[in-house]
Amino acid sequence: MAPVWVQCLVLFHLFAIFIWTWPQPSANLNREPVTMADRMQRARDQLLAANNRLRYESDFRYYLQVTGFWQYWDMFAPNPSNTDSWLTAEIEYADGQVVPVEYPRIKHMPIPQKYVNERYRKFTERLHPIDQSYKWAQFAYRMAYLNPRADGAVPTKVRLFKHFRIYPKAFQKEPVAQDEQFFELIVDPQVYGTWGSK
Image (tube, rainbow, N blue to C red; front, side, top):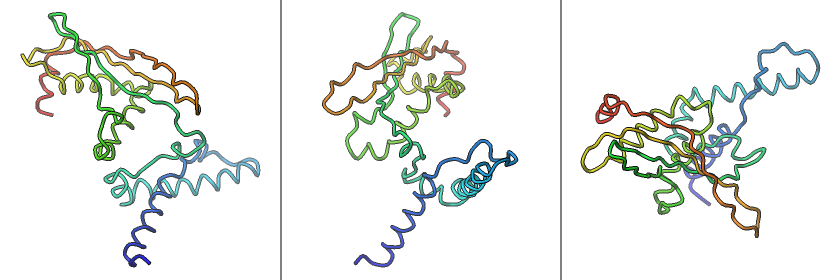
């Protein structure tokens, strides 16, 4: 039998994971209930809203975010992700040189790094959709800043690409990855120059 402190830690961990993996309340939470089904949905949404407050406004979030244990409901249901995706960039210079660079990819990291850098995969999955387009320019500047040329030349353009493939079913051939350019940045040398202070 494990010591009491270990049992308490396991119970706390399970409780924290349970809270974090509940789904979000419905967008209709504040709508006036009309039917009995609406009333049932309203009661469920009130419970989920209370869970949201506990998840985002209590100290639980520090434990889960720092350790990397948090997961959203969509990891478990209704359909876990079946897509392998990663990001690359092409950094172009005034002399015509184009340098391809890859955003850190979990697949290429040793096991200890995979655990610490799992957030890279999360960021990759969430950057591409159009509702995240406000992040694209800053991400392009970051890709250029993290991959400087030896002579200190300032890039003129940065193009962002998403690569993805659907995982095959068992015993089926792995599909070819699809590539898509989703953003091109014309680099402002003054903005690029400020990245050294970030």
